[in-house]
Length: 413
Image 1 (spheres, rainbow, N blue to C red):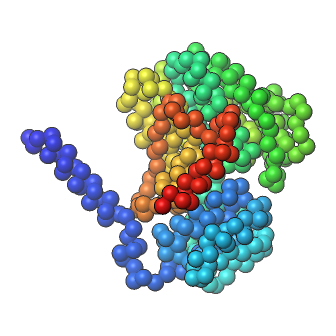
Image 2: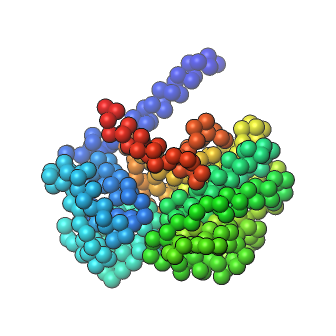
Image 3: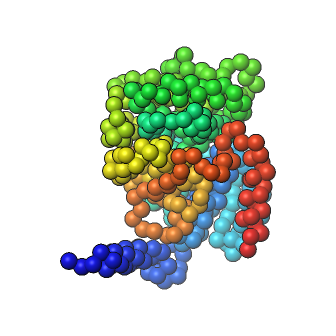
């Protein structure tokens, strides 16, 4: 046979050719004309979403854009206009304000040739299947019951504490108004450290200040989950007006697949835990993806937490689990939001959805490398980061870090 080095070089050449032929094709195949006008219906929870959606539509898909701001963060309009003045002056971008009525008029306008929405599946379906039905293409990012799979291993006390803070941070950031907030912890029922880990997580949540529940409808959604899981409230003492206590509902029955936590994105500070009746890490890595794929709403992003020793011991099962997970983003030992935040990693639902069964949406944004045919993005991180992540709830100087990052991005060139 051929020498191994020659085979590897040939495989690399073929891979490079495939990638080259499936990148930025619109720049090489089109005549240079704009694809049309896309109405981007902005999200109300994270300030960067609307702008990044616009960037993808303009530079990756050749659309001129109208960005309709969400009333929840309408105050961002002036900042957006300053940041994107070049595109606005070139008549590539227009920023408009208003509620649902304004959005509906823009979507139905004859000059609009495409739509992109970040929001809920209910709003998406109202647009697509309304009267009259939508007659133009739409892409979307619609949220998810985000699972975090805890692969059983032998952890030190320091590692237990770190991962408890890690998971808590995935829940409480932005008052849990994130489409990638941790919503279901999938654990191994017979993991010897399961109770210890859950106790550590409850302790972190109990010590973490509650957040102002600024998003409309949060109080009712929170109340619905508290009714469904009445013994799950972690922090209820001296909660300020307008805040909501953290909720951790543990020990959910894996066989009751119709329950609220599996089928409804809480969109508030609620986390559920479901233990799978497995004995080994390899069994867990086989069962957990199957459970998530089949029984949890959505296919946007998920997370796996696994220590290095366990990963080495079950490397084949680990790789198989990554392959089997039907999510657009898989984050290992990191909050799935990191895939969103990097900006160079594609962000979107696993490509199996349809307009009739939309789940977490259609299409990818943040496609900075301009890839075609994206299935998923996999981000792998160390079990314990050498640099303490600034989004951790007990980080001592997150504002200073954020300011330093902003300065770096603004002036490094």
